[in-house]
Image 1 (cartoon, rainbow, N blue to C red):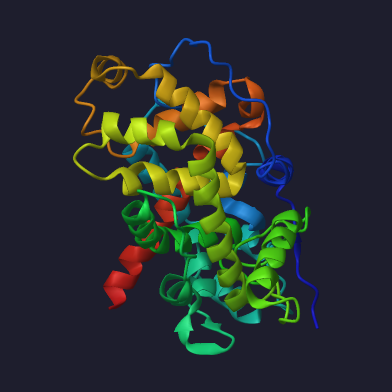
Image 2: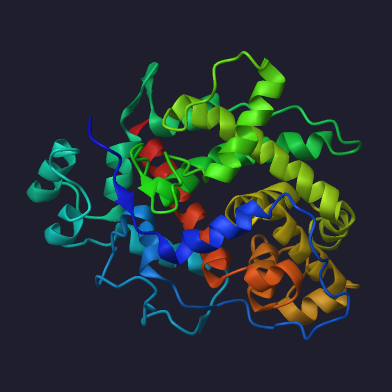
Length: 366
């Protein structure tokens, strides 16, 4: 049996290993003093490794790990524009030589054949190749379908937040295929140099935490979850994201309510802010993102504050409120936010780009 391939994800996973370790720990709060608030949305410097994920497949130009992609470097863009940039990179054709370097013919002969024939030429097409594979034990569904259809989140009893959590669950189901595309390309053999494994790329520390909770729920004698099983990873992801939501509410519930009142009186809080926040917490830790929420809420006392920064009605900003939070976190060196990296600030639009591309693909084939 072939051993899982070991990928170099130095640019993202070194930070994530540290971030996920302390995601459940109390740490110093953010400085409560007001900081100079950034008027820019994102001066993007996108890393090829961030686009290519664990396989380090460049989606254009064969950029090296950590090298800035010059054609969008320094541009000030909003979430929608960033989304289109990442979609373009995912669809951009690569060279046969570069793609073949990532996969051994002895492990993925069908994929290598498709690369050589020109049928697979981009990162998106690699994702579609792996994502369309059957699930062991649920062969009637593809990997993409299984994650959307079968993930079941925990019931969470937090007063006044039942509807919020219900809406968030529905939104998460539509986005998680994008997370798996970014993390592993849906390759179940993916194993990082830091031992993040499987389609969801769980770090060992996080997996151990989820495993303990699973046994607590199902009994100590229950069969342990397997990190290399997509069915078990999906169970683990449901527990992990449920815990992320609880931690965000625990650490920054009041500030979340303030942001909801300030920017989302007409609805959309879960779709445009809460779920992106949870996705970012998967990568950077819920305590760190809670500190970012606290920092953001402290900067907006009135609608005039918001309109001065965004230049338009505060009720019609969509994803840009979260996108701005990510840039604030990246700019801060206070408390836990000192280790919130540029790659973390770019994580969410990369995932949403994949989710949108895969959703369109599914719609075309329906």
